Length: 420
Image 1 (cartoon, rainbow, N blue to C red):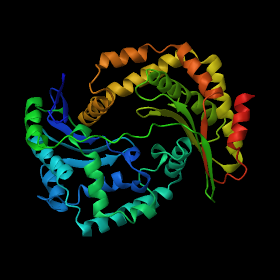
Image 2: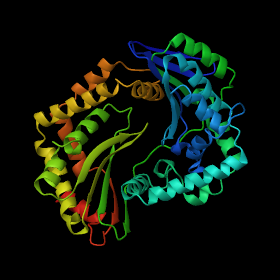
Image 3: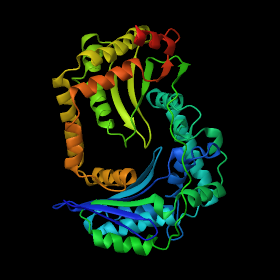
Image 4: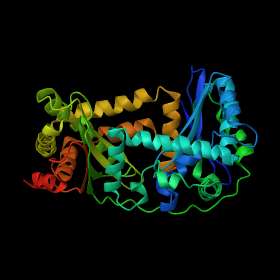
């Protein structure tokens, strides 16, 4: 399997990887326009725009978009994150050109019919309401807000209801004009694909676009803080975040290995100590996420209000203990899990296309798998212990609590426990 990459004269990028033996392909356009690219008055508009892409173009109605892909047994979808918006499809190999035609159409030619805007506005408001009714979803929005207070990176992707209720056709068109230039777009495909044909088709579809200057995004600055919402739920939800490396920092591999060893699986420290030995919760995990210039290591658990103080205390103690006695065996296991998860995921053309797009966005190239594996293997036990010590004792923290949390520890209490 060989990665091939090209760039059109206007900055539009194409990357693909042929996977021999497959009868299908994943193809999509990733646009570097997500939540952190919005001004405060635009919060939620990138996600609104993603919804509107499927509501009709100059050539196809909303129904025709769906039928064109589903008539050939394919699948089409989109998502919005804080740094990208993606439009993608999975089809059989003979239908790759058709899928690209549909995806290009919805990205380049949305009509933003006022009637459809109102329909979709209602759908998104229901989505926001559903998120607010899902404690283990909304708590991460609050945690993000506390981690990056008063910054685009800290705002919810869905946006607040009051802003979504007022977005107009002109607002959507303005965001497209600002952020959907050819330099912001990456066409990525994997599976049964022909790279030369993709480049030729991309030139026909996107080669006419005029380059445009990108608006600089505000750098992410981890602030830390506390959000606490009391509500009569069955469980108290607890989420804790610490500043971690961005994805351009080599220490990202250390951070990911650390979070895996701490709370990434059934053999991890938190799972064994908090759930298996003490029975304090059903769900507990740790994970590390990254952005271009910053990142967070997050711990989440749900438990009863009466047991929350004990659970929080044990969590801090386990973080401190990891700095002292994280073993070579734990680090080796976490490295193996990280490599296996990455390599197993790449057996899917959808995951592979996603990875290609993400790497081109980050590095403007696709580092080899061997290079990535070697960077994972280079992380030592001493690296992980040093990172663990920094997180346990020095890194700023953010805390979010939801449910029966009146008697839960405060962020100041946690800081005292960290320093003890």
